[in-house]
Image (cartoon, one colour):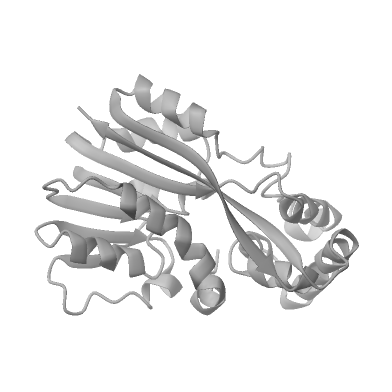
Amino acid sequence: MTWNPEQYHRHREARSAPVRNLLALLPDLPYRDIVDLGCGTGEHTRTLAERFPDARVTGLDSSAEMLAKANARGLPNLRFERGDILDLRGEYDLLFSNAALQWLPDHPALLARLWGHLRPGGVIAVQVPANHDHDSHRLLTETAREFATELGGFTRFGTAQGASPVMTPAAYAERLDELGGVDIVAMSRVYPVVLPGAEGVVDWTRGTALVPYLSRLSAADGERFVAAYLGRLRERWPGERVFYAFTRVLFLARKE
């Protein structure tokens, strides 16, 4: 997938609220090694490096476009690395991830895999979007079905690829307990966002949910796809104001 940092950051303030809450949940422990999984342009990785100056902090992301905007200057304990989350190596005292794990399947197995990279006493802290049942995503799936041939059958939030991997807070808590986690925190929270009509919903999703579709389409087919999607959104939200219930799941646990 090809990510556009500028488009992603058009709604920077709204998208940053959940990660600020996740950062506030972190216990102040003597972390030695920290990794930010799916760090994007690295602003929050930098926050981790500033907050824990005695730790070695690594920002990991698969997008060269995002990492090109990352800035480690002035922080000797911070570095950025291109790579996939599933190829993670080494052991860490803090596994941190903001809005990245939703792109990976089978979260019970994924958590077990990540847990194996966590040292005793270490912490895993994750935040993922949970809007897969929202009308914005449902209508995106409907549009993808209309363009099934052009997309090669890909429907990220539809039955062709399975349902969203994101689980309920209770399911994350139960899985973390099974893995031996303690001090477990798991919650769902709605962050209200007001968008300027259906066009605002398109602009919002262009930075995230639309990316895997448009990455698979030619420029001309991409324009047709967005137009078809916008038509569905206008039927759902014909006015000039959309209240967007931006829902996130946050969870944290410590490994004994």
